[in-house]
Length: 187
Ligand code: ADP
Image (tube, rainbow, N blue to C red; front, top):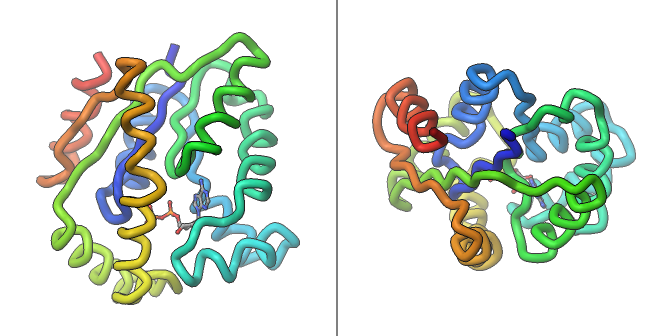
């Protein structure tokens, strides 16, 4: 079964690759960042709750994020698998995801880890800031997001490593080249 995660620092290319991989595997790519940004744009209650955290580069509180993911994973299109991008992001979210899946006797099958070095990440994110104007893409907030990744998200890797699920892939290179590497890693 394809119940997959893609984990990696901001700027590693998770979102781009998640869309390509999910197309190849015919499963939905679920990006918590995209769901938050859509809600912010539409000025929903969820968007209003999340905005200040996102703009400062901090994690949205688990109570908010977990509820949103639980609702998304209850939708029909996830029955044959999914690729989660941007969740879980701390140990408490790992626990919640395990709980949600266990309720249906399910579990995560594989975890893609997309890596790149920090200076490359900052340069990519600054480039994207100039192009797309994401409000959390200025240098100070970018560096903060990288720190949040190191402190809160990187510790998850040992959990999934112990379970033998991690497939590490180099995120440097052409987009299609990286997609091939990721698909190979899943075989
Ligand atoms: P990036 O991978 O560039 O950090 P994302 O689009 O994944 O960007 O996330 C953008 C922001 O959305 C994060 O900095 C955080 O504030 C919020 N966010 C996304 N996913 C989560 C999550 N699982 N838990 C808490 N906050 C989240």
